[in-house]
Length: 225
Image (cartoon, rainbow, N blue to C red; front, side, top):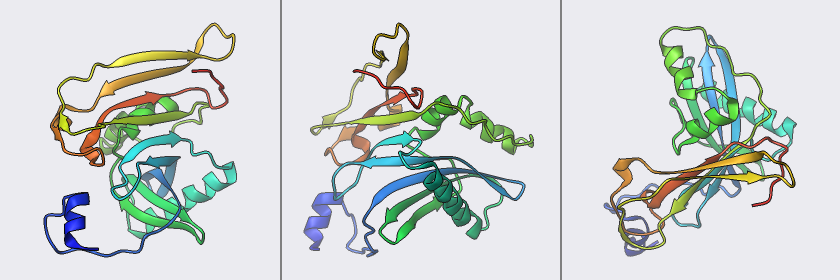
């Protein structure tokens, strides 16, 4: 690929590039807590991406819409990747693609996920993921969160043109299921952190994520927007 194309598409600032195999398939992530020699998977999430060539993450779903057996197998796969790196304590974020040959690790990081995933996952699990990790490092005994019949989702609003970000008003909305009186889905929209309020050059940049929308409905809820 010519250097001018790379410079135009991804703002490459050096002619040095690392060529890696492109893995075709759907991408997922796993959130792991390693404690006392045991890997605890908090959940498997499906990832949504914008079109190539930059693949900006535009959303995450919890749990991933896969059979329960597949979720368990992927949790074991992710835990094995963390163990293979010798990580025995603390959070780990694992990203992988399910290719025709099976799951392929993309990255393993000894940290919590980014992309506001801990916020959404905290709502879905009914417990603060950040507090959980802080307590873990404070020496408290880790207790895995109990299974909860709620799902979670997060979506990012992308900039549709170049410009400078100023103010993004937050909002909160509720959706009802059929004739039910009480809302089953609560949607919260907030601006991204202040550090992201900078000039946006193109829609494909990660910084083009202007705000996020999170929700935590019951897993079996069907609703009309």
